[in-house]
Image (cartoon, rainbow, N blue to C red):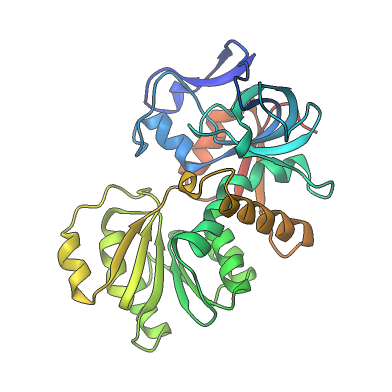
Length: 329
């Protein structure tokens, strides 16, 4: 089968579409004939060799897919050949940029008839990440204020819609003015261009000096350290990535300034297959089916055009999701 393989970390030239053996599902796993694969920032990190978790090279990129179940391993009872599904390629979050993938059946979600295969590849990682940030890692309540960094990205837009639906107030940051329109259209109350406005000052002004209840940070670097200055007393920062660079500051001193807290987040800690995981899947699928939750797809590239897709992601101009089309449908 054809797949996007990174033999060793590096630039865009390290992305190679090549022939590899078709994966076979072991016990508890399913094989999926892939229609579309979702592109994520983590794929660019794996290609560059800066992903926060260990990566075994060579690696097939791609953390989420949609398609048709083409085979099942021993012990799989809840998925059948021919099912239309969306899936996270777990537990390694890799292997989806290919004609076929194999994943643990607990990461596979049957698609309702009203959800297309295109949308099926766009939502799994970003929507479930947003859900568990606001329901598992933190329980956002009506009337609270959340500051979302990189709010114009796919995770930021999911967080915005879910937070607004819970009755929270949403302030966000963008690094490109054009990316402010989408979160505002989805209900964000204030979006700050960090090239023009200090986000700490904006957050304090928005909350009348009190500070926000929660910051969700995917940028790291000095943004993470300064995010504590935007918090209320006893507020919390959840870090979900280091897109702007690895942070380096005295965390303990920062926490003691206003008795704040710092948490990390990994999606697999929501335990795929557990009741908690099932609630998240049901919430997301119901939201997509009802229409109140939207995942904007900003572009679809052919598998052979993966370099262009990653170049667009790294250009930080995408407000939503990019997909790779494999078999289509």
